[in-house]
Image (cartoon, rainbow over all chains, first blue to last red; front, side):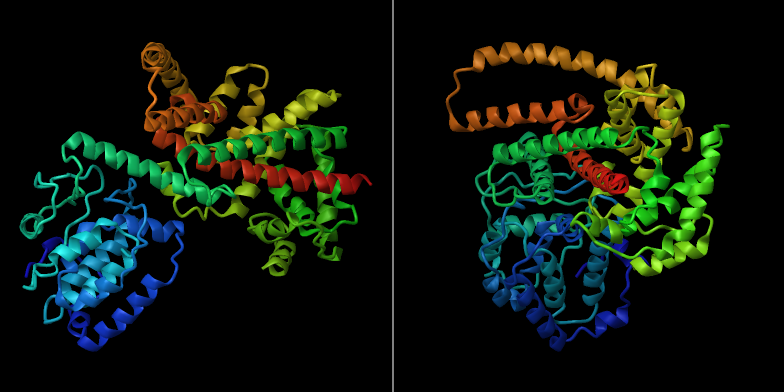
Length: 356
Length: 192
């Protein structure tokens, strides 16, 4: 059993007592939870996705070696998808935190238990449910390895992983063991080359780069509507290009429209506000613009007028009802909450209460 | 790094919209202050211009596209006061950011031109590749170039950076469109 000195930092939420409380009962609970997590369709949202990404897959491999987790491995569905190998974003500490916590937990859970590997492995695996496709292959080969392998707690290095595969592309027990033991105390993550892939540093770096790009493309696919179903980079890029172009065209069109509506481009806002529309969007304008006006003293006579008019408009706000006309007004109604940094605080407070 | 700010992607839209709106209106007032009785096209250009600058400055120089947009805008002397107006409320950081991309831009432009020349030569030799993977790569490369032309300052980015910038740019454009649309509808309703 090893204890990584780095993981005994005070960063962890769990103390040794917690580790001692990890019993077989809790391991059962974890199993259920993990089963549920695995079998349920998982959606990627950005934060969990990156948390996923941060954890190196090989760590899970080692943890899966414990005998308790065999049925867990069997239950793992084959729908782990494209997070092949290991790849990571340029990370920041907030994303590494959860992983550090988990690794600490593993360190302390190790302190007393016979089944120490299983809860740890389950928790860590719950993060890695979408991890590497090669993991099942690895674990299947490693299952006959019954003896308690040391639990890896590799520190995650921020930039530039070392890809120190042993030079063999085949998965074998000995290779797994060796690299696992080697990686014990090293401060960075080892990326394992997959079956049948070259292992020189160039191709590994190339693969890392490609995976970075693929990960970001996934973000883009989520962002651009209608891209989720398309497969293939070229078509997705097509969609993205269309989307950007359409957005740019919309900006042009809207600016033209705004120019056509107003004879002066500083948007005679008082006339806008005295309209009967009364959507909260409009009611936010005076509150938003007033702080803009105060620093803007250019000796222009118009400015003074605007300030007076907006003061009166601000007073009129409570009279307006809340009408939602269009779909796009609705999100703005909820989103344009005004932080109370301006005058007439009470009015803004009322607005906030209405909107929240 | 820009991506670390993108990842949560929960950049609160409300604050972004507010910021954009404030800066936009500031810029518009500056525009109207300088010129009276503009034609409709002038107005439209001014509107769009200040909207773009406001959007870019709302990013506070964290993204490449915003920096290059602002630096491009500051080059033309006519509207520079608008730019200064919008950026003026911030610290002197935008000034620094403005200078750096121009220097980098000129260097990068030379590099890009050189590489394009080389690439063109290589392409002539490689044109006959018929393997499906190379065709796919060719397609993807074509689209990447189009994307680079769309995003301000895109020519200077590598692929990873390009995608990150696209993400950010799309969200900013959406915010811009939302605010403009609501303002337009409000104005229309007001004028009725």
